[in-house]
Length: 244
Image 1 (tube, one colour):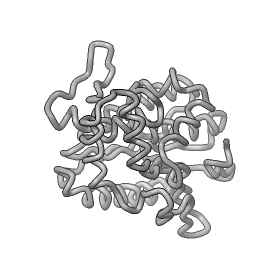
Image 2 (spheres, helix red, strand yellow; image 1 turned 90 degrees about the vertical axis):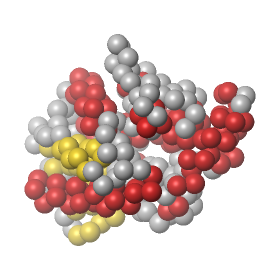
Image 3 (cartoon, helix red, strand yellow; image 1 turned 180 degrees about the vertical axis):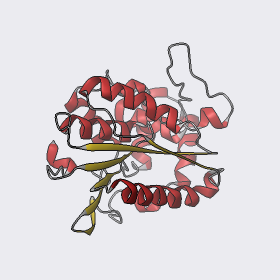
């Protein structure tokens, strides 16, 4: 499994983009687990909150606390930035640009050797439709879910290979996206490999609709409520067979 992540024992400073979603959370766990006995390795989780998605840092903090408990590896620093120009799905380009800027600044400030991203490819419409209909028996829910994919990044379609697994900018720095040429079922396999389906996955959060419909809430048990029908929820059902 380690070859999936391209780990290098010479690294000293590692950045991980962490939203608190399923993909970035198991990626953060894998990095911390590999370097858990290396006191000379510093790990910097990076989280970008926006007006459209203001809950990311809270979700990321939950994951950091849990991974620290599981591995004993604490972050050197949790980098959190707030950006107000990403207000809706039509301004997602601002979010992407600010992610790059946040990474660039963190690389420079902390002399990062590498930055990890949990990006995956989009599942096919047929695969996600079949999974959701099997789960709910309701084609209306599937139709709602597929409506969300219209705004998905076309560069993340299976087979597009626009993004590389490893992008080397020079001899000292790399961007690594270990899941980019697979969909969320690979992420499920990684959770299963590490035995984190019950320990970590239930703490992750992918839904966007709850917050944007003003029904987003945290229960007394501090679990995040998923709507169950947006694309991001249905993607979890497709890969994991459950929301949490």
